[in-house]
Each structure stands twice: as C-alpha cells, then as structure tokens.
Length: 508
Image (cartoon, rainbow, N blue to C red; front, side, top):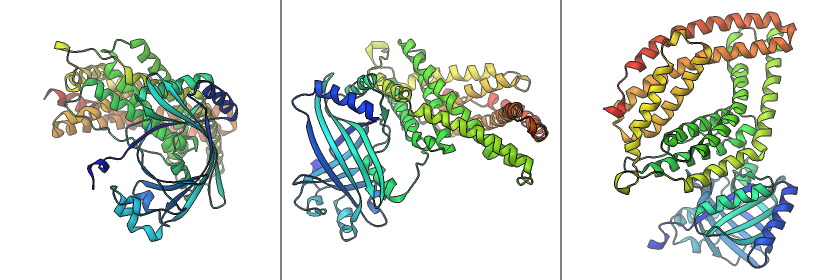
C-alpha cells in the first residue's frame, strides 16, 4: 500500500435543512456573492451494498453518481467522532460503467474488503437530486455551497430532500461555521444530522431514529486547557444533535440523552468560566442551554411518571378503570410536552446556539501562563474540581433537613462535579478515581429517587386540578408516593457521609 493512501482525503461539510421559503432567499443571496457563475446539475446516485448490508456495518458507503454522461464512483467512511461538521474519508474515481469498478479499489485500505464482496454487491437505494452549486470566499476560506432538492428512494419508499450543504474546500473550519451563521440570519435554517447515505439506509431498512449515548472524549495530561476544552465542547454538541431526531420522534431515551448533553455542556463551560475573559458570552450560552434544557425536562418528567412511576404504583391494577383513566390523562400531558419539544427543536434557536458555540470555541481566547506558555489542562483541573467540590459540600450540609428545592440544587451541583470529574479522570490514577466516583454515583442515585418522588407528587396535583373526577385515585397515588419519598429520604444521610469522607483523587 502506498504511503499516500494510508490516510484518506478529508471531506469536511455542514448540512442545513431548508424550508421552501428559506430556499428561495438563500438561493438569491448565494447567487449574488458567488465567484463566477453558479453550476446546476441533475445527479442520480446509486448506493451499493450486500443484501445483509456488510459495507454499512463496516462504516463504509459505496456509490456511483451519474450526471449526464459522467460516472463518478465514490467510497466514503463514516463521519468522525467529536466533530459537528461532518469529517469523512473520501475517495473518488471516474469510471465508464453503471456498476462498481473493483480495479480502482486496489490501492486503498478498504479495497480488499470490498473486492471480496464484489459478487454480492447490489443497488440498495438511489437519490435523485437537482443541485445548484456556488463557490465563494468567506473569511479566509473557500467554501462550496450546494443547494440540493429532490428525494431518496428505496423500493416504493421516498424521503424528500431539501438542504444546503456547505463544504470546506480550503481554509479554517471556523469560516464555514461563520458562513452558516450569517446565512441563518437571513433565513431560518436547521442543522441536518444525517448524511444522504444515512437517510437512504434508514429508508431501506425502515429503521427509526435511535438515541445515541455520548462517548467520553479522550483527554491526556499533556493537553492544553484550550485543546481539552474544545474537545469536550465538540463532543457535547455532537451528543446533543445526534439525539435530536430520536427526541423529535418521541423516543424517551433521545430526550434523556439530549438533557444529559446539555448538562454536560454547561458543566464544561464552567471549567473556563473563572479563567476566560469573555464571561458575558459564556453567560449567554449558559442561559440558552438552560432554557432548552427546561423544555426537554418537562417531557422527561412526564416520561418518568407515565413509563416508570405509575406502573410501579399500580402493578396489580393496570386494568382498573380508574388507573386507566389516570394513565390516559397523564399520557395526554406527556403528548403535549412532546409537541412543545418538536416545536422547540425545529425552531432556528437550537441551530443558532450550536453554530455559535462551534464558532466561538474555534476563536476563544485563553489566558497564557508564566513565560507566555499555554496553560495545561492538568494544571487547571485541581482548581476546577476543588471549586465544584466545595459547592457540593456547602449545599449538602444537613442533607436530611434540606427542602426539596435545595436538595434539587445539590443534585445539580453534584452532577456537574461528576461530569467534570469523569472527563478529567484520565489525568489521575484509576483506583483513586474509581472509589470517589462510586460514592458520587451512589449519592446521585439517592438524590434522583428523592427528586422523582417530588416531581411525581407535583405532576399528580397538576392532574387533579384539571381532572377533579380522578381525585380518589390520585390521592391513593400520592399516599403511595409519600411512603416512597420517606424511604428515599432515609438513604440520603449514609450516602452523603460516604461521599464527604471520600479522599479527593485529584489531591492524591
């Protein structure tokens, strides 16, 4: 294998979804600022795989794109982790026929795998796209902006496509984020999470959008604060956006994972809050993340009540008419909360937040240490963890006597400490980290049980206001929930004592 093919050429692109009105406005704007003339093409693209989708399972997509008499065969890898803009390996060849050419694959890392499957490769789905391409300079970069309109099709199933695809041809990636924000200020745009290949495979298999659990990004002790911070923010943004489709589809775990991503992003922002000069910008990001988190939180609360708490409260009476009426009333509230989520996630605000954060971290200023050297992540870590630990210790005093509101505040502070500690644990000995994190998790579980009981009673009382006919069954539920609450309270103090006495791994 030649050295030039060890690493694939990189494709860096950002997808933005368009409504018809926005498409018209964006098209006119791009035509006015493009270099030269815009190019228009009709593209018919066929994707190939085995009947059991072995290429897909290997993280590859193989396609042939026809435009007039031209045939281009392309192989792409799955997008890389930790990047909002889609980074993928990509190889292209001009070929003569409408079926995959195995000969051109001989000198790439995946050639042997694909060639071994050659006799089993069949068309799995196709896209029909009208593309208008604009090439334009923007803030020191050259960006290709393509407006695609058409559909993907597998069998008799179709999925319409209307999107703006920004591809970085040369220059810094921040320019692409800046252009996306500038265009979003002209017309409402929404981040597109799925590539056309992913949309086609989903259409082909009939698979629903699934939640994605965020992966812990790899940090090392020799990283600078700026490097570690950027990695953590990109990871959180990916987890947020990757779960959007599942949340919109009504998947409870998708909502949960979006909330987790928001809490993690807010915790990461606190890492630099006391060291960064641009605190006003940080506060704006924190406020918007908190607002979106509250919207998701309402649906999550109804999820827990409908899917976990009510079944646990009436396990032997699920066919009782009163229980069924209570469950139906709660499900209506849950459906309304999900409708609000869909409206929120399809609005431009989330896209503006994600693009703004992505652009900001590329240019964020970090103060230098002694001698003009960049501050290391390992140097800052103990100070950050000490600050979060002190806040937890202060808010947890006399834990069994705290009001529900103060216990919830303690829980949020402890979650931030745990998130940051889990990110930074790679900088410290594993044994010391494991013992401390065990006690963190234990107390969080007990605080979570307490919070669930408080929220359940609040939601039940809300249902009683709108459904007075359900008062008897709601009273029975509240009595059961009160017993659960008292039991959860008794477990708090022992868990708190164990955490309070746990050695701080960042000082060992």
